[in-house]
Image (tube, rainbow, N blue to C red; front, side):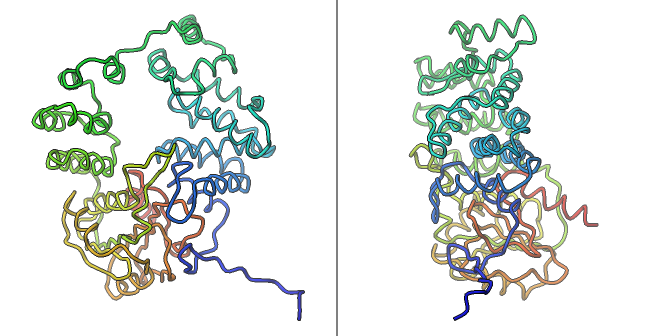
Length: 450
């Protein structure tokens, strides 16, 4: 028997299908951009995904790690996964010099100061056996820079709920940020002393203990609920007895900026009587989108693993599944590429009615049993058609290899999960995550190719 030989290691998906070899930067991208840190997924637990983000960060250049973390926070609206990248950068002598700049770029809310420190100490204890390890100089500098970005209103709003282990005042005491004005100095002192008054926000109003229905109706009459806050509170409004007509009128009167379709999907689940109003508001957010020309095929994964929740943070089940995210992307793509046909795949390929909004979501979800994952067979069948682009929305855990798109057409693999290996590299353009940028990226990349 010979031992002096190179052993070829097969790369497979969790379904056992052949996967593509990818670079460290591709690995960090796919692990990071669709990940709500510590989520338990259908195939992997959250700790494994968090470890992979940590290790992948160390394998890329400091500049690449910093840029991906900032992109994940700014474009994908992820909060904790970018913080894990920053923690890994602290632990690497090669990356440490960019930590302060990275922290200032990814901390966009004052409560994220404490979230970072909590994660920093958690990783320090698990990996280095240090309980509440001292703060590295770059960490202190980065947190001080981040604190300085917030005004008195923001700091008062997020100064720290009672359940927060690390509050803003704790961060101030640890990093000693230098105020740039007397006003900021007074704000910092007020936070540390506990004398800074909470601002008049909807959160404060609702926590004051008054009549919930009256409070919601007052907030809406004053247009004090933004689009996201409105959607997040719909369940509470229904429970408080706010009339459907009042809520529907408010939904029509306000703007839903930077709100993804899947947020409307989740909201409708808790307020089904608001379905028509929510669908109208959701489609209105997409009306101004640039349109793409040419025949488009949209293929949505409805296999069993797509029923998994997007997050299981703090032991609480999420209200969104991967299928919710996939349906939301399909709704968005349907509006951008009106000349399209929509299909689903699991163990078979099924064409669904070419509807808009929630109707398309319903058609996708009910199209077939949520069984296995035969992506390769589905793409093979679709390749018998002529098309300008094929958009696959999936977690990439196929039991068979996905063939290339047809010659001359664009192929996009939209990945809504953070699994280690997937099927969609090579000639496919991989888009990891489900932000508003995902569909827009297709138009931008094709425009650049002209």
